Image (tube, rainbow, N blue to C red; front, side):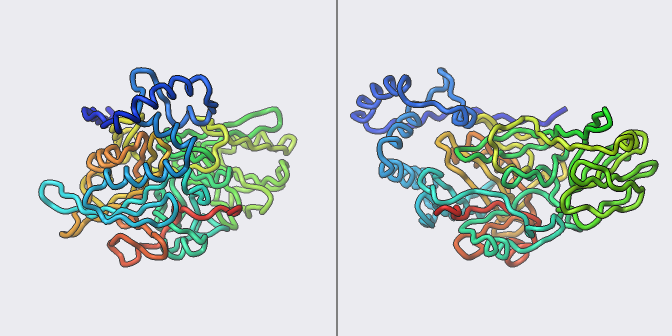
Length: 419
């Protein structure tokens, strides 16, 4: 049975000055009919009549009229949201917040970066690999951030410590590098917003009049019956085929080699590995075409980074450790998280732990923190020894290893190429 936790929000947001309320209500009615509505915006913030938030709607209308008003609102909301915190203005629309909270009378150090993506329009959020040429690499977050000229960086998804290969869905610039594990939750990053969902791979190989399901891409083999695809990012050679299996080298949709041993992965192709009983059929005409999609089929998604479990879903605390096979990460630990608000603000969090001066958080505590920060969607990222946050040239939290352990991947905020 899935472990599900819900927390109801009984606090109503305070409305702004009465004079503003009176003038804006009328504008709201008019704007419902006149303001353009984009499908991607509906995907990010689903507003229904019973949950209609006048305060958020007012802010959105003001933002369309005046960026200065949006900036004023952003700065005010940060101060109200994080009282007694040390707040640093990192760049236009980017705030770094340092604080200590207490749980059961014991301290927890927390670093937050909150970004108004409209104000910070010259910056882009993207996952990155430690190496731009292979999945099997690990580097410190400072090195990764400097290599990509990032202003902000946070450790990303889980990875295999022995190799550095990310464990879970990772898409960068519309290219899928690794597929999902246990259909874990991931964040989709779009040009105009975010979404979160549990992601499934919907991939197949077609050829010789046959279509076969692909179980994963560039991930460890879980069953000998699975069909896996290895791309050049995996390395120079694919793993040997499983028992009673075969590997097929594919270049330009043509099978160029078949072997049970490790096969060189072509730079302009890939290797399919799986049971002979399934894959030998493709040798009839030696043609093979790979189709890769995901479910949900996020339209116009640019990047995807996985994690797990959920922390906040549709504005409510929701922690499903059991469903995502993440029971091993329970307890009180260093934590990393990513989320977004109804106003499309990005929130990155790093929590220190496993020491007397900062005991870490449980997943429920982290989920409640993300909701209190205003997230309508949030997911847990890799934590423990991996938790490390970088802001403006330095590591700002205190990871267990000075500077943080070498990481497989990170999520960064860097200037766009156009800016």
